[in-house]
Length: 296
Image (tube, rainbow, N blue to C red; front, side, top):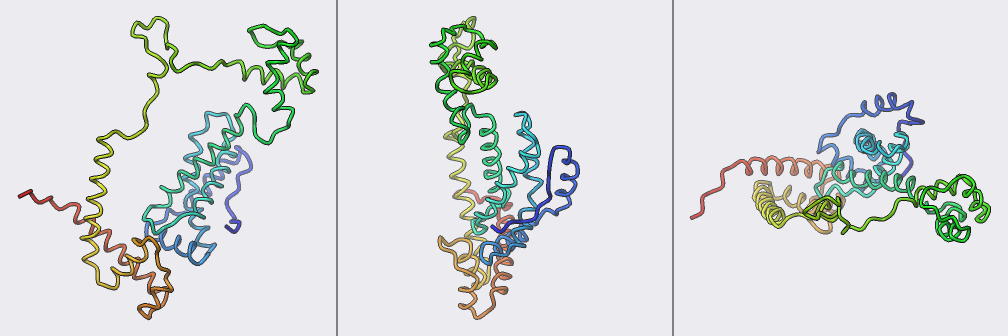
């Protein structure tokens, strides 16, 4: 994607000004967002991409605020989230029927999470070889120097290890603190006094959907398909064909291809597609409110 001009945020001190700027960008209506996305994905319209990005900057700020607890600068969190947003816009496929915000949330969170992990990782990929050597050799060097204390390493001991590994004493102290947190088995008891023998494993939550949720999702999908099929029947033949080829086909046709079929311009095809999409949406909403006929 061509580099876009976005509101700048130099540090946390400029957050108020930044928030004021991004909240000035209007939220896009569904049909407007769709048309901009089509212009970007099919025509490479960078102005359309810019509007898609700026209209979702407030979403990035909201998601980034959830990562404040890691002690990292809010300005950096937002900057990383904005990178994720731009990647989402670049890969967004409006024909799939999802809103950009739904799709972009994953990319934004992924970008911020990766930044947090890079910042908090015990051994950061791409850092000096000495840091990695310290990580893998600290325990061995302590044993060789007879530093067998269970407590944190002291300044004198850190100096000895630093000389042996050619790193700074502070690096030794920091790494020793990080490695001082022992691993805990998931089968270890949470509390020695717990008569029921509850383990750490018992606190883990299975995030997979339940059989009931899966069945409900299947039924909902079946109902949506039925409503869509009935709604499509209400469209004129040309609009139904355009909408089907543009949004429901595994290999969507371009505006030019459909324009040549009907002898009309690309813009006219786009207008018919938007109108058909709006009609189908209203028809689905109307059908969804109708009572379900009783079984015979």
